[in-house]
Length: 457
Image (cartoon, rainbow, N blue to C red):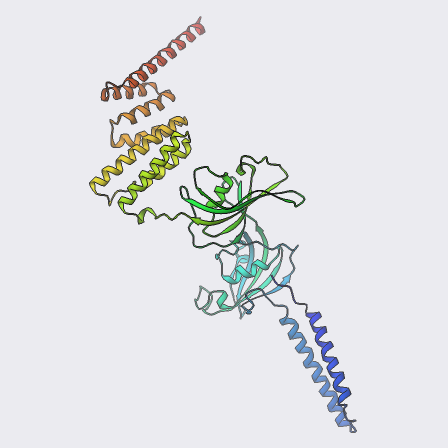
């Protein structure tokens, strides 16, 4: 961040050194006595001239020393503080900063100003959203600080002209650091917050369900007194996203990283491991580094055979989760399977037939999982997608009927079960379900009749 130079201190040092040298010179080589009045006058004028020159030099030196190099040490990014900020805290990399600024060319021409718009400017620090001179310069500013940033072209726009900025321009910004917001919400409920990027990763690809990842992590509890206690850590953990095999805070944090990025997160209690008993006055910090991501082609990069193979793999994984009673997870995997065969424009007729069979199986199984979760609307939706293409599909009709029965649409449920019996007349389970439904309807009507008789009696 750099420390401010102290012009007064440096000037005193300069004068002290200068006077000592003059004294030495005076002893070793004293001036000859000047006899004439003219010579004395010339000496006085010379001394006055030297004094004025020294004063101008000191003034120029003091002015120059107010600029601090806050860049790479090459003078490309200089800062001059106009008004000191508060405290000692500096904005961390990755946080959202809010500033007011006025940008000028070296000749004083204003080319942009947030103050004129009366709208502070916000950006994420150190993420390349602004010119390099800003990312580096503003990172050295404290809250409430006002400063000039003088930025050479190589740290601004280089040889590229902008709207009001000629190519190759050195820019001078007057910047007010208004505030910064530490942390970026990873989850919509604010339960997982990225506090700081510890070191940048590579590229832009982030891991997602259902890829496997390798991570290094540590989870710590921070007491109000500043004591840090390690809860758990792992130097090299491999797990598959979306399978609930790790605590949710770790999974959500990992999904926000790019390869080789390391970041610090805060976790709310609901995102902690199940064995942790949270305390209200304790903060929980999770540090994660993403070591490796499973390589998987994007769907558009795959051949048709690869798409069908991947769809079958995800479908089989989903079915295994269904057998384990992990119905939410099964639904997510079934959806991933369907994604590979949704678009069939480049499929052959035989491949379209195979892909359609996968889609149908996936939707039927999703409907079955939704039945287990008592999500009746979703059951009907999945079945309708099948019935649109195959109006007489018996399993789709049957599962839709079961959902409609639960929503008290008994007439339509009865009609669908009758239709299934017409298609599969020997299916005992359908006959049993139809009998059960009709008994339920008869019992309800009888109870209602008794209720009204008592009411009028």
